[in-house]
Length: 246
Image: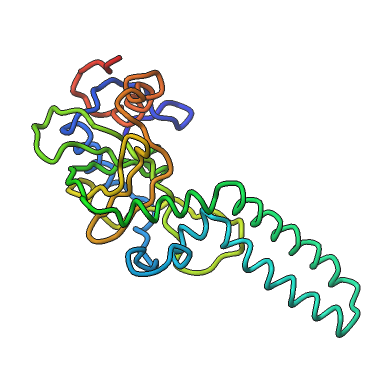
C-alpha cells in the first residue's frame, strides 16, 4: 500500500468492483499483521443467544453478570472482615453493574436477539465476498458482498462492517479486542441469512461460522461521499485508473 508522510493512505482512485476488491483483499492478506483470531463461540443455531460470547457482549450481559457476582463476593468479604477498602471495590463493581444494566435495557438485548434470529433464519442467499480491512494493516474488517453469479466488473450489493471476534481468553470488562485477521480466505463464497428490506444487515456465514455485522453500507451509501472516501482508502494501490463513481 502507498502512504503519505503522516502514515495515512495516499489518495487514489478506483471503482469498487469485484475484480479490484478481491485483488485488494489478496494484497492485504499478504501484509504482515496480527495472527488470525480463532473462534471460540457457541453455535447460535443450537444454543440460546446469551451463550454466544459476541452476543453477550453486545447485550451488556458480559459486563453485568461478572460485575454482580463480584459485588456479591466483595459484600460478603466486607460483612465478614469489615475491611473498609472493600467498600471502594463494592462501589466500583456496582458502577460496572449499572453500566451493564443500562446497555441491556437500552437496546443491547434487542440487538443481540435480532442478530440471533437473523443468523438462524431460513432461506440463506449465496453471495461472493471480498474481505478487506480499513486501514489495511489490521483495522476494521469489511465484507464486500457481490451476487453469487456475475462478472469481475460487478459492483458490491453491500458492505458489512464486522464486529471484532472475541478474544480467546477472558479479559477484564471494558478491554477492547486488538485488531486481527479473520480466519477466512480473503475472497470466496458465503451464505447471508436474515436480510430483509426492514433489517438490511443480515448475518454472513463462512465455513459454518457466523460473523456478526456492526454496520451496513448499502449501494446508496457507497455512492455517497463516505463511500467514495472508503473507495479511495481501500483502492489506493489498485492502479486500474477508474474514477470513483458518484
